[in-house]
Length: 620
Image (tube, rainbow, N blue to C red; front, side):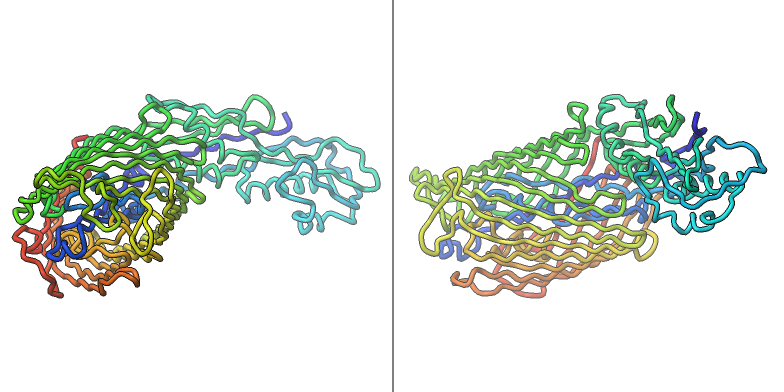
């Protein structure tokens, strides 16, 4: 053999990463409508459901869970309006996941010796006149990259031992750059005009063996590691590929051995994995809906992260209040080893107003939506992610009046004579997350372009319809203050260049925006929100149960498009909450918000008293 390969041990263990279930679990923010006293003047306005940034994982704030931004994707405004429109896409709060710590490089990769290569010239007393040196077989370095190294040997007599030193120095340069299975040797040759050739054999992986999988296809793992194992083998890239697998929600632990292959210059990568549980059943209850259709919401959802064994995800969820029912589903399938995914979502719902004030009108609504999109990560490392998403969505809603059997009737701006609004839109999103040991930064931007496709609503003049353009931006900063102590700062803004149908508007007020007010106290074309919250531990029961106090301050402003008669509206609320967390399966929260700006509200629900609660439980 030209050279002898060594065996490099690559380990990613559960001990090095406390939680294998790090995933971009998505927690939702929904905006719901309540019927305002001026509803006859403004017609029945709808609701905008702001979709959120992805959860903010960090590799060092270990075992501390982070709250999500409002919901899982900006485009999922459910269907309007919340008072009478069923909530089509209540992206339920999923159990918050512990944050894994990635092991340091020196724990993952040892410090192997440089590859040994054979001597091809004998005779310690021989000397050779070297006038020039050429590198052969290198795709990584050029002769210029070795100029400083070769300068010591050119233009003088060189001994055999010095040739061995030269060969070893070339090999070491490869190793120093992470090419741990590449090496150099001096092949048999005749030195014509003092020209010396140094031959390089760059290491390649001839096979990736996968063991330990149950339902997950080995091809799923092999294709992703193959991207990091492109020749020549680089330890840093291979390590990064293993780390990406470790933070994959489908994988509990992963370890790898790099062994010598059958042919010179080849290696075999043997990968052992332990699959994570991919099936989840979640239950939840909160008072996050509009009191007009029943503020208390019950939820159940079932999700499978590996339905067919190829990393495809399926979700189905049902939620209801005293006046509404909704059923949602989604399916996502990977189409490339770069984690490009095709996403399909849909849902149906029905609702009716149960507020006694409007009993005589017997208002009801039904709606449906569906979306088709593609997601592609441009950057995906353990500390940074940048993802693009392009989605085509269509949502339809129809309202009815039961009084005197009137039937379909327009109750919101832009609805046709049958009470229908239809919105088709192309939504382009960009999401970025940066993690460090002490903080997490995340931002999301989305451009929404209304289209006239699929019989979308089209009106003349200033009446809102499906022809619109808007931008939504969201951000969150999370800072570790101490053990189990965190500070959160999040923002949300929407700017529109047209009057919007209610399903596209910005909602302000309620459990996930400005606490101290009813859900969607204001619903406008434009808006901005900023919220600050801290979490401090007050009681701990063992290692997995903790009670935290959560003081907060929320503020927001909402306004309509310039031609819309409604003026600016400001909400400010402050208060305190209690958060109970028990391992990864159970969380409960109780908030009391105090409104600092008075608005007209005569309801008697818990929301009207500034009290909000939520309970989430994951059975498995």
